[in-house]
Image 1 (tube, rainbow, N blue to C red):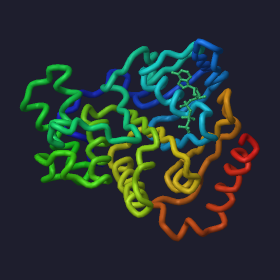
Image 2 (image 1 turned 90 degrees about the horizontal axis):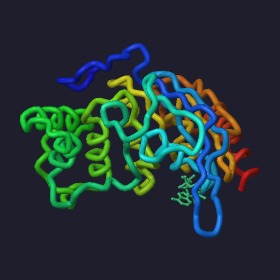
Image 3 (image 1 turned 135 degrees about the vertical axis):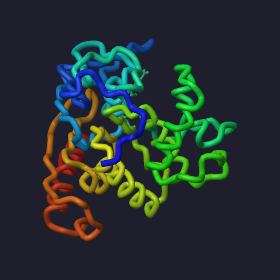
Image 4 (image 1 turned 90 degrees about the vertical axis):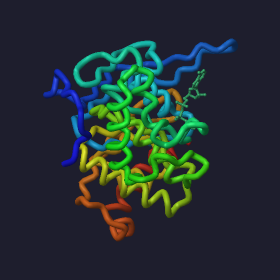
Length: 268
Ligand SMILES: Nc1ncnc2c1ncn2[C@@H]1O[C@H](COP(=O)(O)OP(=O)(O)OP(=O)(O)O)[C@@H](O)[C@H]1O
């Protein structure tokens, strides 16, 4: 276990990293109609679990993740993170990583990682130390002075993960973080993420369209139906860890992937 240095422990340590979503609904009001994106979604994630959300395109996966991150307010229901409601973004409790690395091109990798701390006026020396820790954790020690255009797609996404981790939140929410990467890099990044997860003990909620990636990474897979998004299945993935490439062709792996696919095909 290798937590980031200089971290203030959470007050409610016992529930740090727990997520509770209760009867959450999300309705978007547009000029022509009300779009029901989420309907009566409830789920519980225990601290330290790796949970993957899958479902057909437009079923509300990103909406659910953004609502858990406090970036949107749900229309109904409640969401608590580490035992307290989440009403707005709170980088001490929740880190977020998006599909596009969305780095500032004019800032170096370490300045990008420091950015959330700079916004909160954390002193420069402390910012730098935390950014160095986070960059080391994602395997980018020595690359901090590079600008995004000097980094590969996978490296940029590592910087983005480091930025999500820099305040050492107990929860990391990831919205298709590897979707823009080629298949080889994507597999490597999956293994890297599992290494970081094992080293930090964070709760991860990860959205993907790839059923293989879902089963490979997850402790649990939550399957959503087409809009309005509801939870239609919740699978426990009991494959041993560390996960290996050989498991991809095993019967247990195939059975889980088929079960998820049957739900998605029904919804499509
Ligand atoms: N701001 C908004 N205003 C109106 N409708 C929205 C808004 N944001 C999302 N929606 C709609 O809500 C539904 C859920 O969208 P969301 O992006 O959460 O789905 P998703 O499962 O993440 O999709 P994908 O897999 O294609 O990324 C979609 O029908 C989308 O068009």
